[in-house]
Amino acid sequence: MKAMILAAGLGTRLKPFTDLHPKALLKINGKSLLQRNIEYLSSYGIKDIIVNVHHFPDQVKNEIEKNNGWGANISISDESGELLETGGGIKKAAWFFNDGEPFVVMNVDVLTDMDLNAMIDHHKTIKAWATLAVSKRDTSRYLLFDETSRLCGWKNKKTGEQKMSKPAKTHEEKAFSGIHVIEPKLLPLLKNPDPLCEQQDKFSITDAYLELSKLHSIMAYEHSGCKFIDVGKHDSIARAEELFS
Image (cartoon, rainbow, N blue to C red; front, top):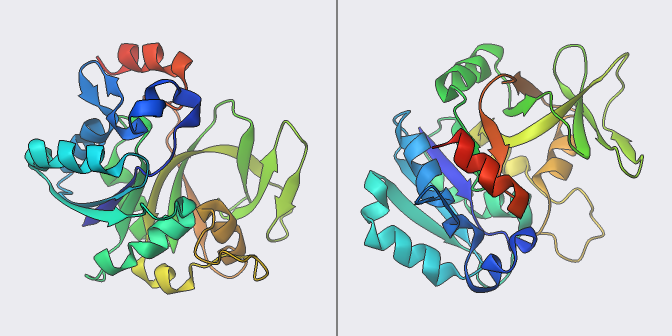
């Protein structure tokens, strides 16, 4: 199995660190976020990993080279010219997933002890096109899942905005954890859901999933109770160091 770590983001909420460094190299108890997630994937036998880069890309490449990929085989998807967002980034790296097997995608700034094998087994059992790790926690934006745990919408708690991709008698709000298991057959279907957008290669994976969920099974995997933190802003760093000492 292969994996992708999404590490191209600007990390604006982590300024001033990200004025001079990429978010991926922020250290938690002496280890960068990138190293921790490469080691996390490797602990499940996933050692063929592609990392996308944009913000201070040479720093990321040099750190990987200096540390011999922390024991993994690391490829680079270079978005130096233009940040493609999560959906565009995955689509650009589609060439890497050429073995016909499902693959894992995760954000570089999430840390967890979730049993990844259990998530992969669940994905295969339910025969989903994509499975999204979710939990019950407070956030400003939620994915909405129907009674079968299939994606059916999205909601912004702060603004009240809601998008429904398919009808549902009931739906449950779940916070997306930035970890996916994806079937390669989904990759040719990934596209910007807005046909009028001038930048067709740049789009959010969430928007793409909402469009795809109209016809295909985009499913939830509940991991509430596991250690999890999104290290996206300064006040999460100290908590991350407590959780992952």
